[in-house]
Length: 122
Ligand SMILES: [Zn+2]
Ligand SMILES: [Zn+2]
Image (tube, protein in one colour):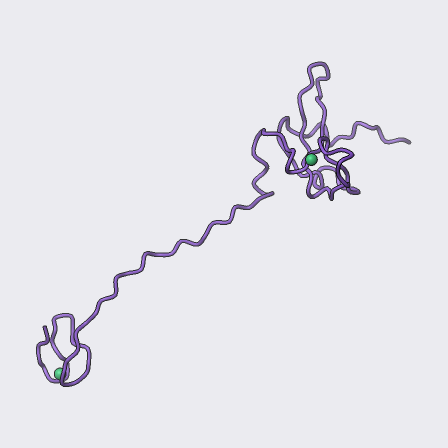
């Protein structure tokens, strides 16, 4: 029994939505529809399958593109390119410089009072 050439995966694709070729139809490296002979076959993980509408064929047609030639349609699925966000750093709190008691060499309290000798340091 022969497997029909129009495999199911094409029918299940959404129009104009790039999907990883490796996900929908894994197999040997293949070529981008635009690069064609100009390039060596690429791993399918690097290629996008896009289903285009066809004026006569209701089910449309599917082409593979490399990331360079991927048509400007919807954004690739979020899973493909996880966006890296730089961790947000909390704004550094201004460092409070406290005076030191000239006699005891200890930091005085917020009110300027030395906890050792009781001096008030401005
Ligand atoms: Zn290409
Ligand atoms: Zn003191």
